[in-house]
Length: 168
Image (cartoon, rainbow, N blue to C red):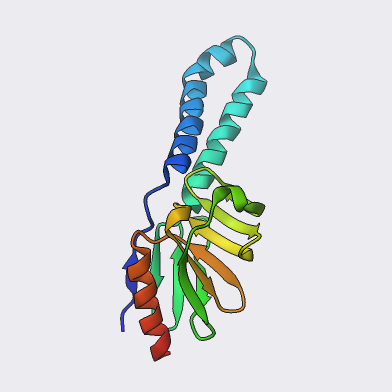
């Protein structure tokens, strides 16, 4: 069987607003860069450059797609980030869930700029790796480790994944 590809859900409203505000701040800073340099405000120019670095890294870290193969699920991300490969052999739970942003404690990762990507902790799910764009369309996976992803059509994704898991 060839792999099946699933698009991530569009960004939630909150994530889109937060991302838009940060990108707008970056654009204002970029437009003001010549004036900042002329006025000797090099430190602020460096801060604007760092903001753009954060924006670009966050853009690259977001999930591009999710691919289900015969024996693994892959969270595909852009360079320089390595794709996350989740083996299906020990997968014992796949279900839709709502991952509320207020209930997440970030351990390590990006939270609120184009996606929630990295390691998080919540009361309901414990510690898990997330690569989600909309917490209301999350799919929780467990194979000893826990993962949260957000395909555009979570119910269809879970049904397809369970079908493949039953064949493994």
